[in-house]
Length: 452
Image 1 (cartoon, rainbow, N blue to C red):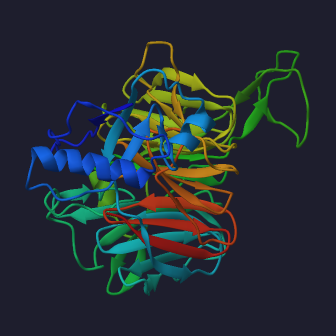
Image 2 (image 1 turned 180 degrees about the horizontal axis):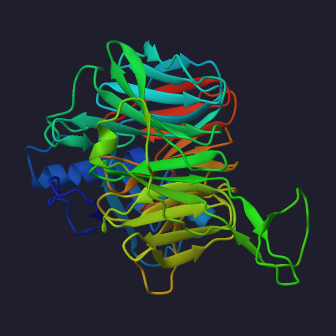
């Protein structure tokens, strides 16, 4: 016996016709049978209803087989009424483009009309909506690039495109449809950040941000595009046991019981108006030092507080920092080294990836004692990157060393929505735009899929 209900977080789509009655169904019923039952029940209450595909959620798991197989696999209690949540199904992503690159892909960013990718050979590549390369940088190649963030310059100053997403034209009508004027900041092994702008069909380096002493691993920009925050590989220092306060670099593979003190692994750059007006100059940066004991590999500005930043590190920690107070607000300690994070712009929830096969969901503002809100099971290799959907606040995509991407709904932690394959090597980065998802791999290709 089952009872169906509708579950969806979107404001503008509500189904009020699903009857609350209890249905008697055979245990051999499949997903198709249950979908037909739900659509028929809705149609009986609303004659104008057209059939739709639903994802059927029992507990925290989507039903992918017959009820009999599901009940046996997950040891579901059948003596009481089985409650099934009906979630409006998404269309299966379809392959759009398979794009080759000179080297491993390190980061991907998407605007409304173009895809930007960086490589480990120092390339910044721009690809149009037809999957064709239209431009790439001509300088500073050879040094590996590790990260990037997309920006957009408007008449009123620096304005930011939705990072890793196509911009909804109803929300931002000022975004240029042409490539001219697009801006991207990239960083990598050369220990600097470079702001490029497309001018006269060329990618021109406008500003160079210096200050890091190690490879730049991550970068993010605030909503107003007036500040950049970036993280690098940690430089670890050792204090002498005899009390000498002059730190010295720890030797390679050196083991000591002396407490380590790390130097800055994050730097905040304030891009002031006088710096904006400089062309091909080196910026005068304002530094804020945040402490991690290992490389900082993920940074995001908070969606609920413009003066706060979230960082993730190989030291197993996610930290929340307040720039006005110049200090740490809270810290979450995990069991593995983190590899990336992303912050949901609507809910403020943080999705993370680590050196295991499990993306995890956190709420940095929670004080109920529960650190991990959800753990998503399905990958078989390290998860290298995670990105929220720009349209749906309950969906995200993850990239993994198992050569696949997975699309998830946070209401189901044990089954993914879709598995996206095609790479021949580890997937190193991913992006979710308005209508597409993209992945970059160690096989030196970019795969682009359409999404509903």
